[in-house]
Length: 226
Image (cartoon, rainbow, N blue to C red; front, top):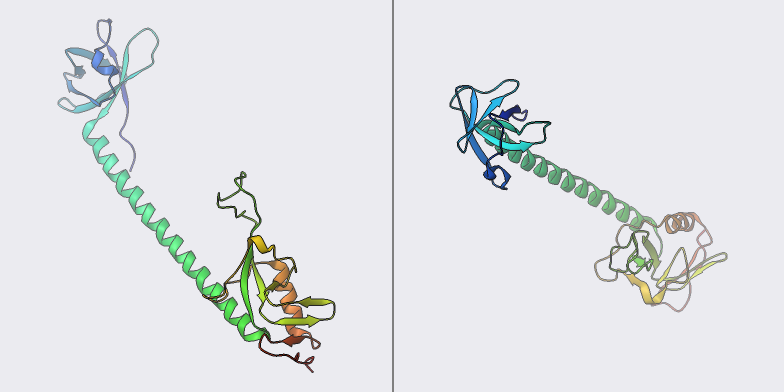
C-alpha cells in the first residue's frame, strides 16, 4: 500500500500561521471550497487538492516567501498506518518463524554431528569451552567471553598417539586448558564441537591404528588397534 498523497498550500493573506501549527500534536483541518481551513485561517492549494469536506492532517513546511503547509487525507493516513502496523507485525512473525526454523535446523544438524562423533570416537569425551578472555572490549559479549570462543573436544580418558598425548579433561587442540577459564560439559553431555583443530585431530585419531587409550577406571592402557 502506498502512503497518502501529499499536497501543499500557502497561507492566504500572509501573516503568521496559527500557533497551533507549532505544537507536537496532530493538526486536523478541512477542505472547503477547494481551500484548506484551519484555526480561522485559509490555505490556498498550490498543485492539486482533495474533495470538499475531506478532513486533512497538516504540518508546516519550509518555503520561500510564504507560509506553507503540507496536507494529506486523515482517513487515508489512518488506513495506511493501520496497514503498516499489521505489515510490521506480519514481518516480525515471519522473521521470528524463520529464526526458529534455522535454530531447529542447527539443533538437528548439531545433534547429528554429536551422534556421529559418539559412534566413531573410541575414547570417552565431552565438549568444553576455553574462554577467550576479553573483558568489555568492543567485540565482547560483556560476560568475559569473546566472540572467538569455540567449543572444543576434551578427552575423558588418557590417550596417546605418537607425539600427541592427552590426559583426562584436556582439550585435543591444546594441553593448556586455561584452567581458570575452562568449562567442561559434564552433566548434560557434549555439545557440537566447533574448534577446527580439535575436529581435525579427532579425525586423525579415529583412523590411526596406534592410538592407545587408558580408561579412567583402568590401570593398564589398551594397546594400539590393529
